Image (cartoon, rainbow, N blue to C red; front, side, top):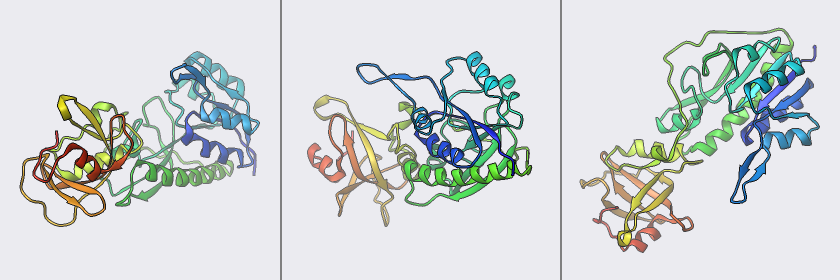
Length: 315
């Protein structure tokens, strides 16, 4: 089976497993392309992208183009048969996509055309999907609109949050990429147009993370699960008149019926350190909380600190 000359484009931690899989595939890795180093921390120290660190450890030459022109020149110099893209973090211009003989193959963590965009795993959980998956598709000039090569479904478990689902999808996606490389080397190419109703998965912000207890409890639980990797779901309280953010690190739907009350009312303290708060529909069992400036704690301990009892109102 012929060897492919492959260029890899990816930046954060999630790209590293895929880079390792490409490096172990037996194909020639012409280079790894990442975002430029970024200043981090109070001292604004320049920090190298995780994928760049791994590439250097693997003996792969690293490129960090700072502009579209530089990216174009890098890919042209590498003259790849195939480019593999995983969370690179930048749209690639159409003229650059034309430089790879076979094309640019992107790994996306949803079943396209559902959840096009930066946060497909988070939005699948937020929206309560029962099934998601991984898609290998060919980049074109649109945002996650190119033709599909391979796809794999993955069930969403009741106890999943963004971290656990990311972990499984990354493992499944790595296997799918390895299968894709085998098929491409064997000349088994597919470019099937995306079918079905598209949906978007834009980047999530702090404004998206606020829990509004007037909403149904399942919707709030989806938010807690989907935002486990940040920005973490939160609500606000004002002890002593000082508005304080409280992150919800874990939650669940309580067993049994929920009493009638105003949204935001504390209904009961549960065994195991959680408490149930009334929502617009149903109730949400808060298990682990992290108040601003403090360590994570059982939700009931937080409630005691507020001197709030069942019947009291959060906020």
